[in-house]
Length: 260
Image (cartoon, rainbow, N blue to C red; front, side):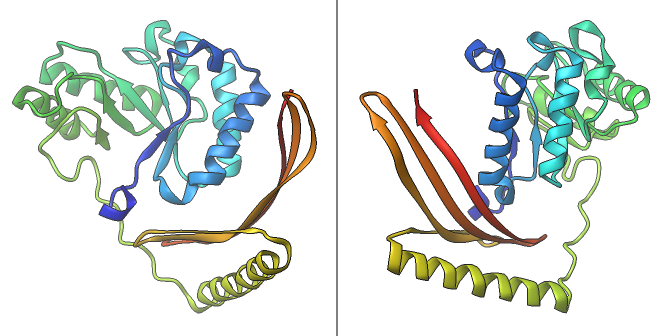
């Protein structure tokens, strides 16, 4: 997707997997952290959960959104069941969110879609992405609903539209100053030399991933600390340098994994 100029929004929690949604808050935070670590340079934003109000209370969603915003500078959205505040009408779910993925529901007219978008923005003071208003995105009817949402002020749509862009036009990317360039070059040199040294002397795995606006490279290795039958404990080390249009980032990661 990145290679053809698309940057997706990453949805982090499904609504139909109780083995996931019933996990502890710490386990959910750890999952969010791992996804951000692996994909932050390739996505444009996140949605914490699909129809969050079906399985979590507002306080838990607020805590997870707050956690996300400590580990990424990308915008974070919240999606609920149909209506403002979902089926509970609870706007507290949106408290920490940067934007709202508003589920409009089926069989709406363009006028009803526009009214819901305007009301949501007025009540919450947050940007709205119109979602789930048509099951077939390519029809004229679906596009008419998406166009109505755009004209009402939505910043994006989920099920078809004709208007481009919707809501606002992103500003051009800022030019990097000399300091950013120097930091980037130094990061490349340090991580590159470290990766080569560890690969040559300690059999670390070299890693490289790149698109037209994203490059990530480094080295990693997993050490087996313990193994007995089905039980095992591993220790992982990873050095990564990431370069995008917006920032340079160096990461040194240590982690444990295993089966018990």
